[in-house]
Length: 73
Image (cartoon, rainbow, N blue to C red; front, side):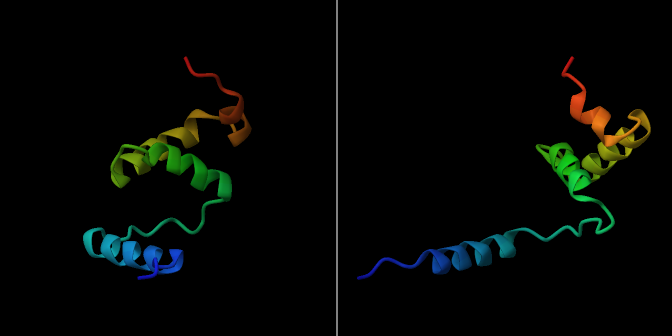
């Protein structure tokens, strides 16, 4: 027997994941840096909690560069 191709393996994994998880629509109005920051908020959190955390970032910082240079306390 030959080994399945990578594309076939990815297709099989995608099919299984699609069955167990529903997609969550993303906000198309966000820039690339905003999507990256949202992904950081989304790590180990629910989408609703990540939205709340991201919404809290907007008024807290003057601009996205300020987030980039902020150190961890």
